[in-house]
Length: 266
Image (tube, rainbow, N blue to C red; front, side, top):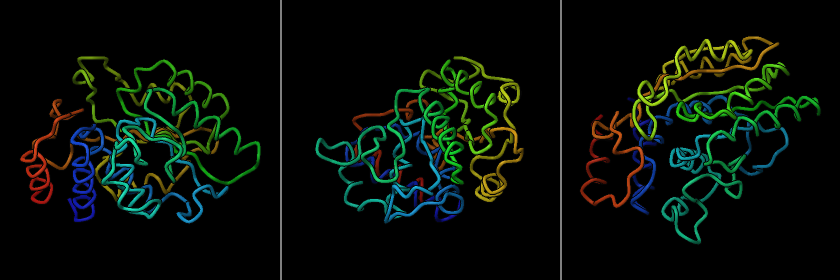
């Protein structure tokens, strides 16, 4: 793991420290996906977050917002001080993303809503003959929601090549491993059956992600689904694949120190 990925993970833990509760594992598996998008792929203007020609990126798995907040702040969408007020009553950053936060395109948290919103954005962009692209990041547990597949049917029907679905496929959800709770396999074939062009990549390989995101769409007649194989809690030995860190509250001083030490030593 390179220094930038370690840095972003340490910032996530420092932000978590403000309230001592949050979805840690879901944020840590997202870091390289968000990093590749915001460092190298998305078109945006931090001085004008509502610029019409910006690409739209929706974090549908809103419980992973700690990673999104850290990346948006790193890019300059809002002051650093807001991170240290995470989940405070009068703070900017809540436990799930809201559109009041500069850089956040949709309020999410209730799972299964991000893709329908993204399809609306994509249809409008086509209607307006606009060139911006729409990216929607889903969790794999979120793909248990029927609304995801209803939306996928719609995207396939309308051949929305300006839409890219990115799935954080860490194969864990809040109740346990996907294979035990609700197995999604054959996952890639499901997206193909709904009319998507499908790619699969290592979701922690920044170069592979950059290549996948930079070669869109692979088919001008289809929306794209990129399945990112990730590890829940990636980057700290105590959190990797550990369901206790899906959501944790009452985090102690020694746990914060352990997380930071493990991130630095990874």
